[in-house]
Image (cartoon, rainbow, N blue to C red; front, side):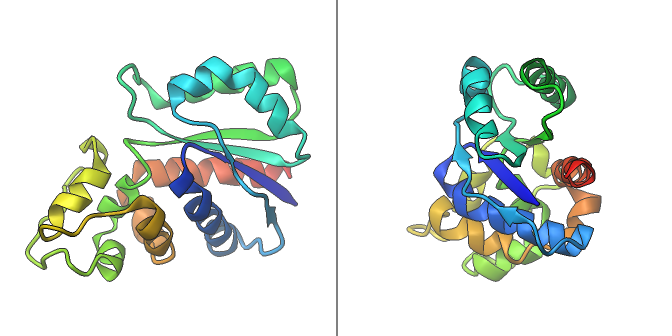
Length: 195
């Protein structure tokens, strides 16, 4: 089994393969999937514009594709419509290629706002009396929220903290508290059936 993640930015290159390995093992009982080095393809507007070329480049890896994007652009309206539109474009190019699209609303770090225990275990400087958002997916700017929650002079750094918090996420908790995680888990399950 081979899986190619396509991600938005540099911080995702380390965190998402770790997340996917953990999910495959802990949620789906798969321990022998080779996760390839992610392709970085930018934000949704850029992905829409360059989808065909990027998809054709990804196919050359001879692997199932899981394209994971933040859902925080100004014209982002409906997760399922956006995912379906990209899948239609993929199937027009190569109808049988195993590909799934998963969106993180508003961004990857929304998972961290959904699992405050995991987040606090890494970002220890967040004061104990800090209330995490009741609806994390309504927060636009989760990275900024994390930085503001820490003492002055301390900030959240995607390339430093993202993989560390990812390693501690509680999947059982996230399934019930993060629609984006549940969406990603279903997308991964569909890919597992195709591989």
